[in-house]
Image 1 (cartoon, rainbow, N blue to C red):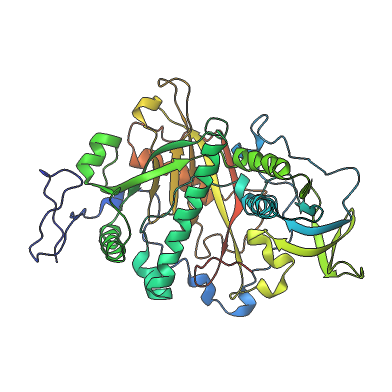
Image 2 (cartoon, one colour):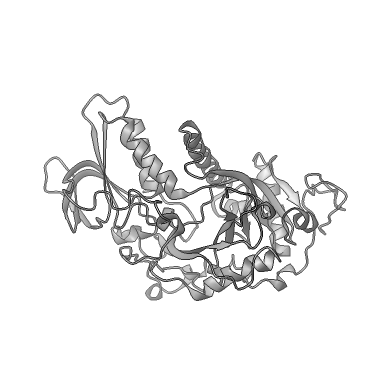
Length: 452
């Protein structure tokens, strides 16, 4: 079936194809990737790392390095008031629950645990959060700042891998998580303090294959009952007129945020929720070196740190890509594989009014960016831009946990992509104001989420 587009229709209207199939996006874009410095169509090859012979594949993570690159989210002045919390002084030696990791997973787990003990009649649940470095200095403090669920991307492939029911659950989980986070922000009136910006999310379709896959994913997801009424389709002329890029796209609602500010707020809220029933202590810069059975008659586990041991009954590993350090069975191709991501903050060459508030994704999701909010529409916004792993060679930054130095090849792609995609809106050769890396992903062979 050929793909057609009737430019006289609005972006959301349907156009009949010759075959009579339901045709909502219909356009052949040809080879529009010729002008881009970023590699395209790398989706198929990034899983090839899992096919390497076992001796060449070692997903052992180790502990986070001490001299990490400076992140905009973490290292902007005043951004991390809890950075050194509990790093000196007396160490907790006994707890009901120990949570390893002070990112979004660890802090949200503590929050839900605190909410869950409201009806408890006994004394307070003693919970201790430990982090190897400063508060929230891992993936949550180093990511791209998007708070947007995947609408239907890759639905056909997920359905093939896991079946329709399991595939649907993955998208439902994203929608649920996003809505729950937004609800907490709304109830607590945190919108301004966490820099929440609701805006359209634009997914650029940079190749014919990307267009075709989007069409198939959308159709399959809608047939599965996904509510996709908020999806808007644009051809390249409409994208050019509205945003200044010459690629077709689809859009849907999205949000951006300052992740560390959200997690800081959530931690402080959790401490105050039920102080008589839930006691929460934080120890940063206190890496857990090992876990062994406790010799205490009242506790199950002993957590060894450089500051002493902590006895506890339950351990929650909220360590993402660093999981295999303490859980050896999670190493290798069948475990959780650390993968490094790179992000930068670069200034636009035009005022915010010419950039819009939209967040973006492109190149099969390898690159993603959005403008930080500004006080004056005439200000030139700072753009948080991530991705570029597709230029890092055949391993795609897999098995890299060292976040003390950036990858020059990845950095070049990130420096070039916005001037390529938006001519005139970004200066070619402009250096970023900050550039950082982080072990952002804990990937698996099947691209699944793991909860143990």
